[in-house]
Image 1: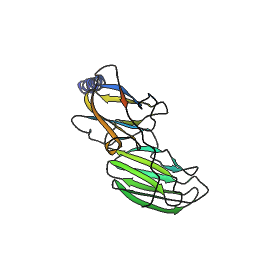
Image 2: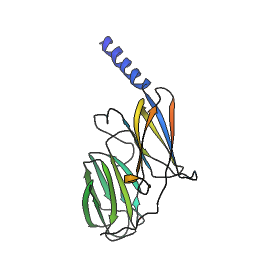
Image 3: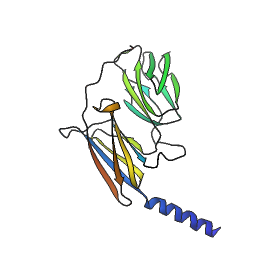
Image 4: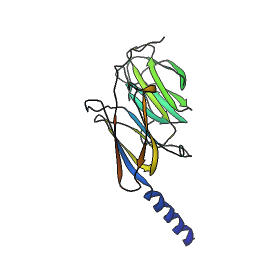
Length: 208
């Protein structure tokens, strides 16, 4: 039993020694921050096996005639709730190949849920309020987070070594709105990367 405990402790220490915090700053050409950019790290060997859990709620609310949050990160296999917190009814839909669905009219304090079973981007709209736009980024890696108002994000316990860094934002000027590069996460200490990007104006929402 003692040998087993020592073995487990050694494994945990070894794992901790090969994980680090990795921060990413996303900026435009003039150095201004880009918020709501989803940053993911994937080991060169591929996404790790096992279930993925994040600290934030798997919830995309309708509040003040907008989606809240504007960008939500969820893992593959997540069930996301869509509560209506407005005094008016909403009709939420997505035509995205990652997940096509339609939540027909429902009112204040009612909620619906959708299961997301494939990685990718899901663009959201409301059939009643054309100005509403939101996005769900479905990921297959636990190393994911989005930039704050200052354009910064920290990914904790990132795997040491070469990883694929992806930066996605719905209005990013890049193929599939995403920038990809290979970076190295240090075995000890903290790593940092600055990503320069351009943003285009949001496209008007349309049902067609």
